[in-house]
Image 1 (cartoon, rainbow, N blue to C red):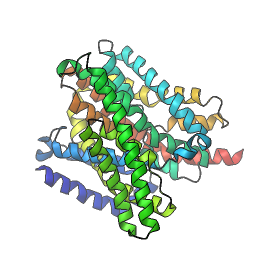
Image 2: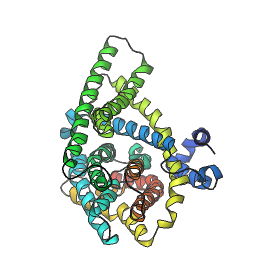
Image 3: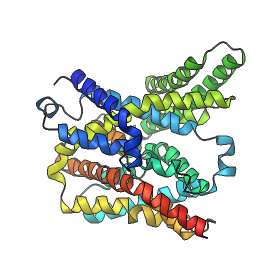
Image 4: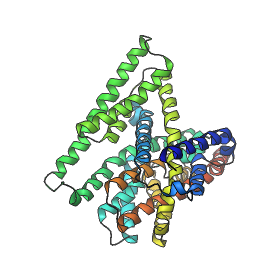
Length: 401
């Protein structure tokens, strides 16, 4: 099966899924669950077995998906109001997230003692960002208090961009022996990657939004192309940063942060168009997870890998979150709810692909990669299945107060 045939096959599955999506969602069966299972069932097809994780077409789709997600998620947040309005997400992002990354790294050393600290940090950092899409029923449920829904959504929208710089730094340091990087030029390389990208992103995001706002005020652009222009801006930000020697993903994220649509209608158009672009790509990636990634790493799912994956989804996330929300004015039940709904999903998969393409293939790296893949797979089902019943339970508890 050629790559183009595989892509057509997946989009046929997308069409069929779309016909029944509302009914499936009402049964707590999410899109990521469906496409991961469909991918696994398709993994024995001869053409799919011949595909590799580093296939260029699959990597390109993953790159576009990551750019769209980073930009769209970041553009959801108003920088002007962020520190005034989002007190709970601030604690989650600037206390809970670093704690999760540190505790995850230290725990990984207990399970994989012979591994490089930097590699273990990559594992913990990749498994730190959350994906609200895996618990979509939570952020859409009227049963869940608005503040809790907003906190989960804002945290998920920003933590994938915040963990990217430390992931890139660790990967660059791990690459050092195998590339022309050395201790003398490693720091300038990292500085160029991490400082140039925010500069490019802020200019393109702020400047692009000003041009779009001007065009809308002058009635020069139509409704459709307002959305297209916003998504195109994310791609431009990525490519420009890469061309200048910065990191395109960071640039796309910062561009989204600095994007500011004057019109609510224009903002919603951009969000809607971004969803239309990213959602098929995201489900495509989940299909690849089941069809190619899971079979590839099946033999690496040792007891240590399984236990660490389960810990990552529970105590390694939940304890730091409960600690950071200690002074927050929400109930303990709501704190536990937020702590549980930190699913690992598309960001972790796409950062895995980033690491896979940057690091050499050896048994040590493969074990770390297998841990990431298993954690995401478990999260898809654990968080997907519990989203509706747990939301309903919390809603009843809130009303009973």
